[in-house]
Figure 1: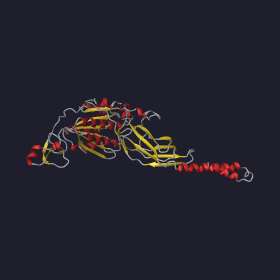
Figure 2: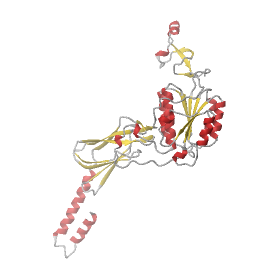
Figure 3: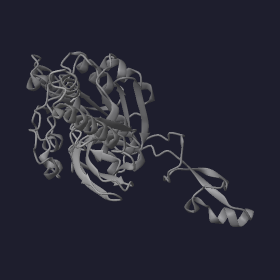
Figure 4: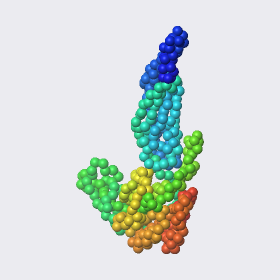
Length: 416
C-alpha cells in the first residue's frame, strides 16, 4: 500500500503526466484508505474485554478440561474481527479462536476443550487479543495476564484389592504421639480450647470440674504404609508420545478408560504411586510418601482425604531429576519406620542393590512390596527377569509392570 501511494505520487508529479488527474486521484484515494484504516485500527480494541472462567481448577490426567471464553464489546462501534490466541501452558492451547462481527454492546462466548495429557501446575493464560482494519493493513494487540491456575493431578486407576504383605498384623506398641484424630488410645484430658470439636468433650469430667474438658488421643499403632518412589534421572526411560491428530474430537474423550499413559516410565511410576496411595487411604490406612525428584520430599504418614490431596499435589509436580540412590532414599527414613509397616518400593531399576535393600528391610521387621517397571518394554536394553526371579524366590511380594499393561489388573495380582 505504501509503495502504491509513493508510485502514484511520483507519477502525478511527472511533467508529461501531470495533466492526467487519474494518478492524483489514485494517490488521494489510497492515502484516504490508509488513514481511514489506521484510525479504525486505533479503536478496534476499544471497549473489548475478555474473561476466562472454569468451574474447576483441579483436574486429572486423561480428563477433558473445559474453559469458557467471554468477549464483551462495551463500545458502540462494531468489531469486524477479533483474534484470540491462547498462550497458556496447556499442550494444545485450545482456547485460540477468531470471531467476526461483534456488534456494539454485544457479547460473544465459546467453550474450549483440552485433553489433559501432562500433570503439574498450569497458568490459564496469558491471552493475546488482536484486531485491526478490514483490509488487514494494521494490527493492534492487547495482552491479558493470567488470573488463575489449573492443577492437573496424576492419572489413577481404582484398585479394588491390592494384595497386602503376608504376616502383617494390625496393632503394635504404643507410639506415644499425639494426634488430632479420634483413636482407641486415650492419652488423657485437658481444658477446652476454642476450635476443639464438641465430640471430644469428656462430659463426666466437665460436669465434675464445672468447665469444659476434652480428651486427648495418641496415634493408632496400626502398621503404616510407606511408599518409596525411585525418581532418579538415570533409571527412567522417556519416549515421545503419539500426538493426537489435528482436528480430533478431543472433547469426546470424556472417560478415563479412553486415555492411555505415554511410553514413559516416569508417568507409569507416578500413576502407580497415586493409585496405591488412593487405595490405602480410602481403606482408612495411614500412608506416607518419600521421593527425591527436583528436591527431597517426605510426607509423614497420615490418613484421610486431606493426605490424599497432599500426595496427589506432590506427585503432580514431581519430575525424575533426582540423583540419590534407592538404598540412600530408604536409609534416610528407615529409623522412623514402625516395625510391621508395609514398605512399597516403585522403581524401573534393575541393579542388584534392590535385592540388598529388600533383605535389609525384612531383617528389620518391615514388609516390603516391590513394583518393578520393566525398562525393556519401554525400549531399554536392561533385563528385569533375573531380579524378579530373585525377589520371588525369597518370598517377596513382587509386581512387574510393562508398557501398555492394564494397571488395575496388574496391581490386583502379584507373584510371591
